[in-house]
Length: 184
Image 1 (spheres, rainbow, N blue to C red):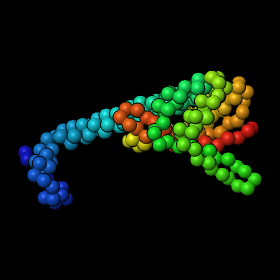
Image 2 (spheres, helix red, strand yellow):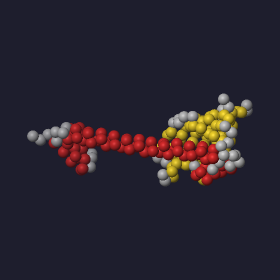
Image 3 (cartoon, helix red, strand yellow):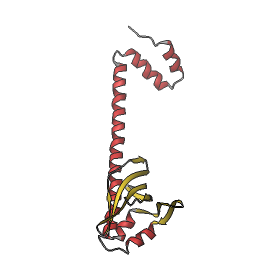
Image 4 (cartoon, rainbow, N blue to C red):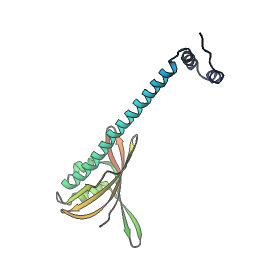
């Protein structure tokens, strides 16, 4: 017994390319056709979302790694490792609250690296307190990272680092680092 296509579906099919017409016609003739199609679409949707989650997890791990590498390079006073964490035109922005108001100072990463090189190994120790939100969209990402900073093994200040990163090939690099400092 041949099944007929319902009127709304028939109208919809007249607006579609020939291939979709044939698929829809086949589905109306097959008792399990719609169930099979729904199952396959569900599997495809699940597989695609799972791949995206795996990619974001891998990228998130790489972002954490470059941040930890930055802190380790600061502590060991390793200019080569530190420079490799930043894009060539990266900047740091330091936000401070002053009696006259909030002030943001911009420093090129090259100047920041020069300042780190004036220290002795172990003098600077920046520690991740927790991993805040890491947001990734294709080749750009942001990471919100609360930190504590120790100078010569004594607590100096704490704050939040906000990293803006860009992906080049398989590597993430810091383009902008905005941070604040609180004494208590």
